Length: 238
Ligand SMILES: [Zn+2]
Figure (cartoon, helix red, strand yellow):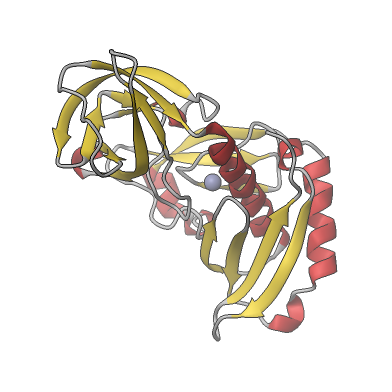
């Protein structure tokens, strides 16, 4: 099992680690700052710095079996030896953009009072799909409410809920969490003041003020139960 440093500190851009094993083009570390693809958030990319100072590009990160996190190296790269020390460094500007989009989607989830049927984020845009009539979705209204919540600079807090309590409150599970990981007694939660509270395993900002100014770039029907609201953020330096 890999210790997932991003769970407690989403702002950690690097950490020292030991190579547990190498499986083909995938490297398993004892601990990592790399977020693996999940919950609509893409896996991190970045570098492993080996003890001789050379850098190995990591092109994707994914969950493996039994809580392992798999760092996929670029084709043809020199692989680190099991047992060796490395420094894991994520592409921080990219991750920070994903954190801004991820946190903005939590606000979008709160602003549109409808069931969420899907969602995804990238470095330059993000969307949620809602099971709602198109006439209920007004871009200007959504944009204004999002901007108000971002400007309010609300705190984003990580917590936990017991699985039994979550089972008793199924309304807490919206889509960004998809299927909260089970079997450890507690499920990680994200709370944004009194605006949004749901299970989520992703990486988030500390405060909504870091989101910047959200804009609704498109509202489009993607099917009877999928009305897609896409947002873009202003290009803040990160
Ligand atoms: Zn989240």
